[in-house]
Image (cartoon, rainbow, N blue to C red):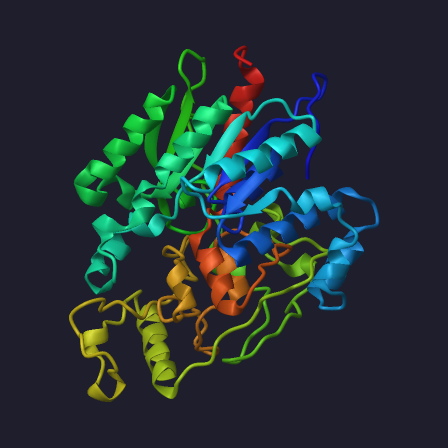
Length: 431
């Protein structure tokens, strides 16, 4: 939702590049920042961003949230939902691929948005290029790809990021990516990135951060680069680790039991019975409508493998090895690579392993810890592991929803980063 700045009640404005489904943006909006524009090439993720902006707008208007809930329940169409939302809200989502050929057109759209809303300055740019080109898993699989990893054009998308820095001269920026960016192409990609960020006039500092240190119940390592204009008095925040006494099961316990291949969007327990973690972090509120609690079907072989994997985990936290399965359960010729391809979500621990976009291919790496259900996790469960609130509605089919969730920055992590950035901006004399 666009807000005009004023000196008495300063609102800080940001642009989100390579925005995805909006996990990073959500954290900054929750912290009080105003989104000027989101730039995202995927049409489903762009639609998700539009829907989320509609949510924030309707939430700000007394009595209007009923339309959002009706949309979640399938009682009104998307067109009917957006009939209650000003057109300028959705126009802030720019569904375009960033390239040398398109960037001037994107600049023009953003300039028009700023002019219409009387916004003079961009305080912050956030986002990070698609991580697949830098991911360690991606490089491990590059021999099977049509385009070798070193020739992937996504390697150079950081240059688009620096073009935005050069044009809009934000006070600060936040650049997020996978840890593999530091070693991709023998470290050359990361070296070039840092050089370009400095060349356009910014001091930078880079540290690897883990989502579990920000209150997210997930072990998710990411590189966070924060930059500020040379000569200013900003700095890299000192993020204090958040210690949670909750378990991953606290994210799952209030959701209904699912049969494989089914959907059930009725909460298993009342809001008052939901875990403290769910309520404290705003993942579920008393007014929420449950959506996306749907799971894929599984073959009989997969079900038996899931059962064995859950039993192994429950018996001393042992992991099932694919190469140790009996021949009748083996379907892949390669028994030596990815022997941990079947993995149970660590429900009885303080955090689970990293949620990946590979969920869109199959759910073998994210098996629900309840042996009575013996299935992969649902879309909503994946969203919760990423700390998305239940009010977050993901557009597109199930495959697209899993991709959007797996690629996202956990909103809870993003909010903690945003709060630290906001504190610097408010305390700074360099405005």
